[in-house]
Length: 302
Image (cartoon, rainbow, N blue to C red; front, side, top):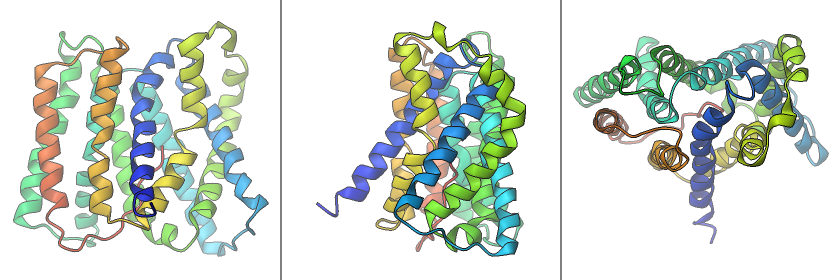
């Protein structure tokens, strides 16, 4: 049973993240704008991050690391969250979920640029394939047959993936020095405090009374679930299984997001999207399998 638990955790957190894409699309721009949605999600996540203090003592954080936590909070808690929300409000859940899978390729590019990694023939092939597929998906936002996509939305989703990759590389050392509950508490409490002055007014003037049924369920789901709990499960799984296995489970997200989006009538699946997605998946597979002894890379939060 203990051997099954990390795999169940990986399945559950990826299912939750896959549900993000159609649920965000269902709510954003129609019932709630991006800024109040981000504000609400960050406030809830910050409050949830304080709960572990009921049974564990607060971990001491070095003065220098407090400044790093501020940078991490601004990057992944504020900038990435806003770009993702605005992106999903302007593109299809299918395109969004597929574009987000290029994060490992972006991590490779940044790591090589900073001297933490090096290119091999296999990595170069994977990078060229994956990035060409990602660019193709982004550009389909301008095609008339992709009526649910906009190129600006695809660009914002790609930019949010870039911020995730930067977070993984730049703050890897910071994350490894502290408990994950400490990391989550510092990042999301800071992020909530930063966003609150800008989003509080729009959040208070959001008319939640017009939400009923699946709209209300979708709104509550994306506010309460995607950020805090899945990341705890993910980091638990990372302590038990290899990062390569973790990455494989990540492919559940676009598959489930596509199935949900089509079933809910939010998007249509086109042959060119399937082709470009396969190109991205093959490219990422080339990169992941090029590591004989993969190291743990923290994944960016939702």
